Structure formats: structure tokens, C-alpha cells
Length: 117
Image 1 (cartoon, helix red, strand yellow):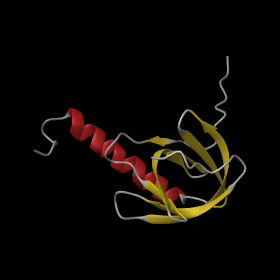
Image 2 (cartoon, helix red, strand yellow):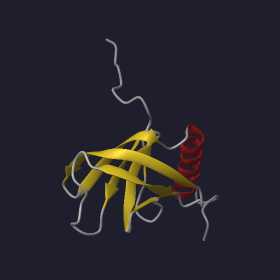
Image 3 (cartoon, helix red, strand yellow):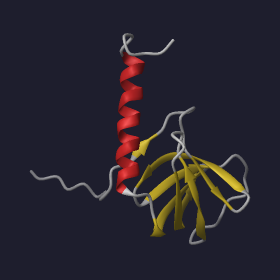
Image 4 (cartoon, helix red, strand yellow):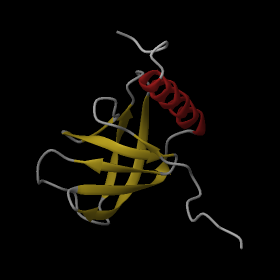
């Protein structure tokens, strides 16, 4: 039996406390997960963009890296918003750096020898 993954890009999921943020207009939202071509967001208030609305902004990662993005809102469900990037997206190198950072953080959480006090 063969398995075909419908996602073309791997997603990085972020726990509370280490999440990037997306800034656009005068708004800020937590990034719950991201890939090269999209993000899933949580907004603090109920003033949500509508589905099919264009969103142009900047994703700021905890490492200090910031990336300009442009996309469209494709889903709004249960307090979360999904944005698919259309013109400007997160470069593969940034995603790979985030994957490495998350793996190191996860290893530090389970390995007391590498964990910070």
C-alpha cells in the first residue's frame, strides 16, 4: 500500500512561549505552526480578517529573524486562522533553521544533561 502526503511542505508546530508572531497592519498574532507556504494563527481578540482577505505582513521568529510574507486567509475556525502565502513566503533556509532550533529545544527538555537551569 502506498501513502501520499497531501502536504508539500513540512509544518513546524510551536508550543506556548517559543512561538513566532505575525505582524500586519496594527495587529499581532501568535504563529501556532508554519511552513514555507503558510501559517496557522491565533489572535487575541475577535477582530479577525475574513476568508479570502489578503494579508501582508512580517513573521518574527524568536531567533530575531524576520521575514516579509504575503498571502490570503483560507480558513477561520475555532479561534484560529489559516493563511496560505501567495507572493512572498518563508524561505526554506529559515524553515530548516527553525526545525533545527525546535529539535535542540525538544532535546533539552528531555535530556537533563543539556537542559538549562
